[in-house]
Length: 343
Image (cartoon, rainbow, N blue to C red; front, side):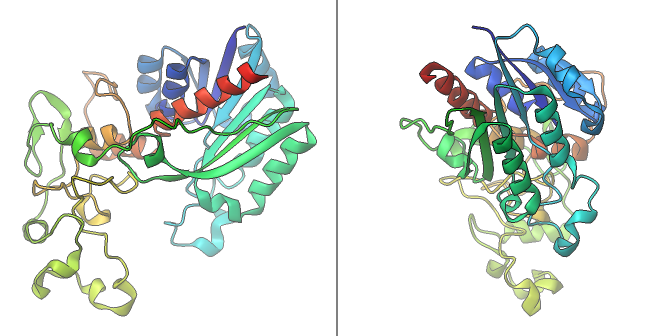
């Protein structure tokens, strides 16, 4: 039985990599951002299709999956419209990506895959678009399950809560957790990497580089304790906004991670010391690109850019932070395969 998938909103291929590791052939990934093409194709040996999902048709998906007995459509529509980090929460529908989940639903209706999987932020469950998506699947004859999970329960050293939906024709399918999975710690994942100073690049790996820190932020991180907050600093170092009542609840920004726990959610801004608890547990700097990638469960040799391409930190950080963690993708893939075996 040949099992194939297409990955919508594929990015640099985190979900695809996980599905392939589980044993599912991902024939192609679709994404509008052509800067993701190198990483997606190089690491996954799958076709990258640069295209807006608005323009994808069910006929195209059917053609891609034609050689397979079991057809799977997966995707993580951009989460920015639904994220709790959005400043304009009251005006979410104005975001350019708001309607993409409706396009995902349209493509499912047109292509009629055997299995569907969708991943996004938990806050999506508060929105009508999510329930429209579920209703649309049920009307097409799919049995739908969805749950909010934490990636730390799937062997990652990162706390990242995600909404996972699985749907299959006529029979229930659920995300399965391996009972033998052992939670990893930050130290287990990045503790053995060579030391680098703020603003430096390790000679043996250009992704192992960190952002520069100005003098005041160097003083702040030196005054920071693992898992502590800016409340540990001398008053002269405290950022003015944190002295206001509205800023006192933001205790994790400018924070250090601890070795023995998990990291916070790796966002697209994880290389910035002031954007979250992204300070290294011991070294006076923010996380490097390599450390962020490893905490996202990308393998050490995952190629993010070609050797001849100039490295722009914010671009690579965006790719890593936006990705579906490969380990979570693998769990989704194994759950699909288990469903097919039982079926």
